[in-house]
Structures are given as structure tokens and as C-alpha cells.
Image (tube, rainbow, N blue to C red):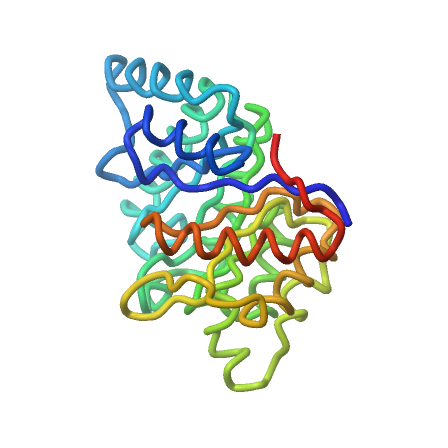
Length: 266
């Protein structure tokens, strides 16, 4: 099995986050931006650069959790504003010497109801090209609802836009396409296994948020799926409280040891 890098989220202050990650054998941090904390001014950007530099030697990749900020909004002004925000995020990641950004189409339940499919494809394609010019790869994440929760539409967005992908296995489990048994989890990756560069790992998402894994049995099939993806070597344990994160870490480590990858990380 390929060697994987385990990462955690930026759920602690920078100094504590670095110490926690290194003490627990993580190789990296996935740093999430929201619209509220995305830095715009030079002073804010300089402050973020100092924070990120303090995380060395950990690798840092980025995640844009921009609820209701959509490239394909039916409202043209909102769509233009969304493009400006995502382009700014890409420029920021490039200045931080980052190379990967995970983003969403339709973040928020029922949020694809006010989106234009054609505009989404067109503007996502433009954003991918813009990011490519900066040395940044755009990775589209599958959600628990909306277009990217449907494997046939997720595949089309990836293929038509030329973007890369992040597979969220908690969203995968609760996708209506899967729970209805119209599709299998493998259908999300079969058309383009080489496009997946990373994963978000936890058991499942419900109204309470992300639920940690209890046992390896909870996640083995989905971890096997990740293991089959040739370029998916960045596994983010996407939990934001220590006990759930560490319990999931134990499950993932058990899996990797069984698969002969017992020392993931730096």
C-alpha cells in the first residue's frame, strides 16, 4: 500500500496545534478558511503567514469552507463575488507556498437549489485554470447533499472542469445515492481514481456534526477504497475535538498497520 500522510485540522491555537500534531505523529495540517476569517488586509495576511510558518516541519494544505458562496449562483452579482473570494483564496494559498485547496459546490443543505449548473461548470473551469497559473490544485469535495452527493454529477463536475478531488468518507456514507442503494460508494471514484489527491476521514456526518469512528469495522470498506486511489496520500482526520480525533486516529493506525503501512507521517 502507498505511504500516506495523516493530517488534522486547525482546531487549536498554533503553538498547541503544532505540539499536538507532532506528539501524535501527524504529518500535516489542513487549514480551513471561512468567510469570517479569510484574511484580506496586508496586516491580516502577514499575521497568517507568521502563524503558518510556526507549524514547520508540518505540511500545510488548505480548505475553503465558504457556506452559501457559490461560483454558480443564479444571481450574477453573487456569482461574481464568489469568484473574487475564491481567486483571493487561491492567491493567498500561493503566497503561503501552498499547492492544494479543497472547496465545495453548494455548502449548506439544499444549497444547490439556487445554483445554475452551466454557470457552475463554466466558472469552476475558470477557477481551476486561474489556480493552475499559481501552481495551486483545486480539489472538489463530495458533500452529503446536493450535486456532489450524486456520483454521476460529481464525476461530471470533475471531468468538465478539470479539477482534482477530495473524497470525504463521512459524506460518502450518508449520501442519499448510497443510502438509497442506487449507487455503491465505489461509484464515486471509478470514473477518475487518479484525480483524488486527499481524503477527509471520520465515521459519518449527522445534525450534530462529524461523528468519530468507533471501530475499524465502521470504516474498513471506505479506507480500502482510499487505499485503492493511486494519488490519495493525504488523509485528514476531520474532527475538531481531541477525544474523537484520537479515537479515530487509533482506528486509522490499526488499519494502516494491518495493511503494512504502520508508520505513516513525516
